[in-house]
Length: 314
Image 1 (cartoon, rainbow, N blue to C red):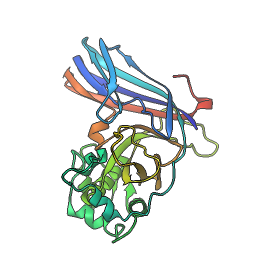
Image 2 (image 1 turned 30 degrees about the vertical axis):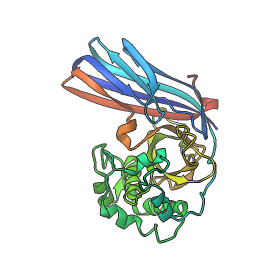
Image 3 (image 1 turned 90 degrees about the vertical axis):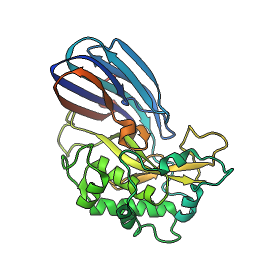
Image 4 (image 1 turned 90 degrees about the horizontal axis):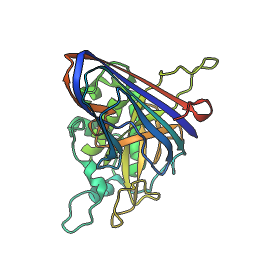
């Protein structure tokens, strides 16, 4: 599937900002299930300096600075991506306890890069309530992939998607107790549950193609960015980690989207586009930075995901 994505971010400042420095994760990365055919950022006003590189996880990251006063900053990211379906729907029948043991420290053992995603992070905490919720799925001897998918399915049934019920600062534990939130909350809750059990799991940001109701036109800007989680399956076929050194054990990431109850190796589906992955939202936030001036600001975001036949050029 070929998809075109337009992601527009606009900041309106009062009063004007004198200088600003920003970091953006708005350009999709290459993965085994997607090929980036084109991607570019268009900014107004134009920055005085701009540098693109990769972060520690291999995500595309853009730094830019504006040294002139501006009352508005508009960032438009346009991307064209060829996507494919999952590399598979299941992993090896390895019991989840064996996978947990795989990540426990052993002197002289081979370092697995996935171990970095076993620990707490800014938005992912270790707490008994997450383990209590997860244990219904993670019964003794159950294969990890099967248990993880079951946990995702239970979350889809138990939690209510409620727009504007949370924000980026809402703790995952609060969303767990409220049993409601948005895709970011559900991804963080799933990560908390998996890491509390001693497993490796990472946060994925991206997009999902949505279809308008029958007979209605696709609304420009009506889509949104999306988030889901991935759990690491050691010794699984079809490694999806390009950053792993040759000495690292072969493995794959099983993507889990509790918002839409979909899962698959490498991606939940061919209608998904991966932007970036990290420990949690803080590692891959679309735009962050430092401004001088601007006592208040208003943020507006518009996302449009369209099949390539009806899309504009990058």
